[in-house]
Image (tube, rainbow, N blue to C red; front, side):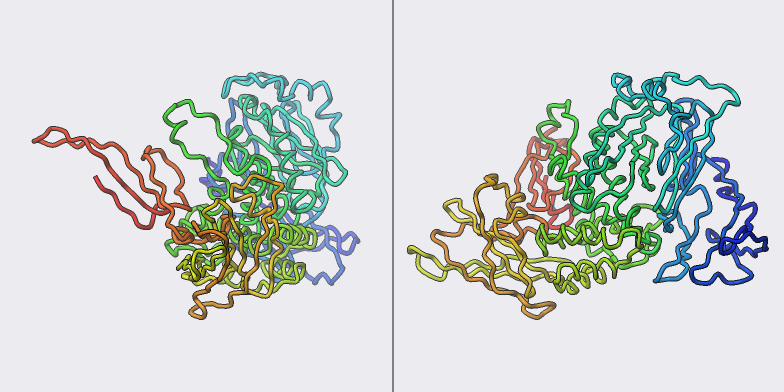
Amino acid sequence: GRYEAQGFGTEINAISVKKINGFPTEISVELMQDNTILKVLLQEAILPNGSITFQITFKTYFDDADMRRRMKMFNSFGNKHYDGVHWYPRMCVYDRKFGWETDQHLGKEFYGDYGTYEVQLTFPHHYIVDATGTLMNPEDVMPASLREKLDIKNFEDKEWDSEPSVIIEKIAGEKKTWKYFAMNVHDFAFTADPTYRIGESAAMVNGRLVHCVALVQEPHAAGWQNASDYTKKIIETLSGDFGEYIYPKIIVADARDGMEYPMLTLDGGFDPYYRDLLIHEVGHQWFFAMVGNNETYRASLDEGFTQFLTAWCYNRIDGDVRIVYPEESKYKKKYRDPEDIHFTEVYYGYLSDAIRHNDKQLNTHSDDFNSATGHGGGYRHVYYKTATMLYNLQYVLGDELFLAAMKNYVHEWRICHPYFEDFRNSIINYTHVDLNWFFDQWLETTKTIDYAVADVKPQSKPEAERSYTITFKRKGEMQMPLDFSVVLDNGETLFYHIPNTWFEKKSDASTEILNQTGITDPLKQYPVTVLPKWTGWGSLNETYTATITVNVEIKNVIIDPSNRLADINKLDNRWKCPIAFEYDSRLASYPDWNHYELKWRPNIRLNTIDIAKVGAAFNGNYMNNKHVFELF
C-alpha cells in the first residue's frame, strides 16, 4: 500500500516524563533511534523498585501491507477491515539474561513484557470490534438485541463470498467507543470489521468458564459454524494436557491471516481445513502468551513448541488422520493417500532436510536461519525440528512422565520469560533424569538418528524354545534408547526396550505402543521387556546384540513400533526391507516414511516406426530423495 511504500509505520510525536516514583514531574528526555529501537535517555537513573510514568503521543499508519505480523487495513466486501497489531510503541523487556533486550525487529515475532492494559478504541458505530482483554462496556456497544442479529447461526446457509447484509446502517460521524481491560499480557491487539458475525462457546477450565469467540466475515459464515465450539475443544484439550489457560477469553477471527496475540488469533480458511490453523494459533497462548518466550532471540521456544501442540491437539480431537471433505472425483477418492497428522505437521518438515544433512542446530539466533524473514529455508526448523525433538523427548521419557514434566514447565515459568536453558533445567529437575545427553544433541548439534536391524540369527535348534540373537547398528551420530518389537510366525508381537542410560521409562502395557501399532484390544496387556543398556556414542559400541527366547520362529524385527524415533532411514529399521508396490496415480502426496515406494503406471510411447508402443513405466524412491530411479 501507499503508506508502506513510503516507509510509514508508527511515528513518535512526543515523549514526556509525567511521574517518577509516583510524584508528578516535568523533565526533558533525550531520544536516540536505532532502526526499530528507540532509546530514551533519562537525566537520572531509576533505582531498583523505582517507577517512571511516560506520556507518549504517536501516530500509526494502517495499510494493506505486505509485511506479516504488522497492523493492516484492507478492503473486505466493500468495507475497510482493520487488524490492530504491533500498532503502538512497546517497551523492550528487561530480563535477567540480557538486561535490556534490544534485538531489532526484522518482521518476525516480537518479545514484550507483561503488564496491565486499559484501552479505548473508537470506531464508526457500524463496526464490530473485539480485542485482547475483557470488554468493559458491552451494554453500550453490544446490546443483547444487536448480538442476536449478529449470531453466526443466522448465516449458516449464506453462499460463500456472497454480498454481506447490512445489520447496522452507516451514519456519517456517528461513533462507538469499545473499552477493554487486560492483565498479565505482553501485548494488546484488536480486529474490526462491519461484516463480522459472532459465534460463542464456553470452555470449562479448572472449574471456571473461558469465553470462546469466533468472529467471521458474513460471506464466510457458512464455513465457520463450528469455529467457536472447535476452539472450546482446543482450550479444554491443551489445558488438560499442558496446564490451564489462564485468560478469560480467546478469539478466533476470520482475518486473512495466521497470527497470534494475547487472547486473539487472526486466522482464515474454513472447516475442516482451518482446524490445524486454529489449533496452531490458539496453541500459541501457552508458550507465546502465558510463558512469554523471547522469540526474537530463539523463535523455537514458541513456534516449535506450538507446532508440537498442533499435531498433539489435532490427534487428540480428530484422530491421527487429517479431516478433509470427501473427494468428488472417484479417481481421487480411490488413490488419494490419507495424511498422517504427526508426519505432515511435524516429522516431514524436519526429515526432508535432515536426510540431506541440511538442517541447523536449534540453539541458534532466530535471525541466523536461512530465509529468517519468512517461513522457508532453514527457518522452518524453528517449527519442525523443535516439534520433532519434543516427540522424541516423549519417546525417551514415556507418555506419563513427559506430560507431567511439560505441564510443570508451563506452570513453573508462567509469565517469567524462560530461555532454552530454563526449559532444559525444568525438565531435568522435575523428572530427576539426566537428559543432558539428549538436549546437547538436539539443541547444539545437527546430528541425526539412524539405527538399523543388522542381523537376526537363530542360536538353537527349532525345539520348544528358540534362542535368537538380534544385532542392531547405530549408523547415525545421534544416540538414543531403542524400542523394538519382534513379530512371530503365530501373529504374536513382543515388545522390548534398550535403555541408553540408567533411566528406564515406565512402559508396561504402554499406551504409546498400543496406540501406534494398530493393536486395537485395549484390555489386553502387552508388557515390555527391558534389556541391558546400550552405552555408546560416535565410534564407541556402534553395535548391540540382544538375545531373546521365543516359542516360534521370528517373522520380523521392527525398530520403533510407535513411529516416533526421528530416524532418517527407516528402510533398515526392519529385518525385512519394507516395500510398498502400488499404482502411480500422479496425485501429489507426502512420501512414505516407513516404506520404499515402488510405483507403476501404463505408458504409451510414440515413434515414427511403430507409431505407438504400449507398456509400463516404473519409478521408485525413499522420501523423494534416496534410491531414486525411473524406468520407461
